[in-house]
Length: 123
Image (tube, rainbow, N blue to C red):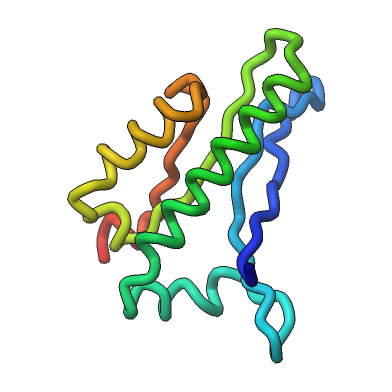
């Protein structure tokens, strides 16, 4: 696929430990190279493709968080942050699909943080 996820570490400033990551979707466009979300999320919102794209990001991010948790099972908390667009936030199946992804993965619900921008709330 042309989409991929980069994970930005969430670092505790007090001791420098990594306690999670934020999932950031990118598009490897055939002509324009790697594009950040500001370049394609508005189009995905407009066409309705944001819902399946968002679900894919959620599924992949939860899968990756599980992988890290299994690999580094030192008992420390690990959180994965996933951004939601305004369309996703208002999608009637958001809660059911999120619960489904968590149940199928076995990831603790508290390990997932859904991030909503201020513009999503006011827009």
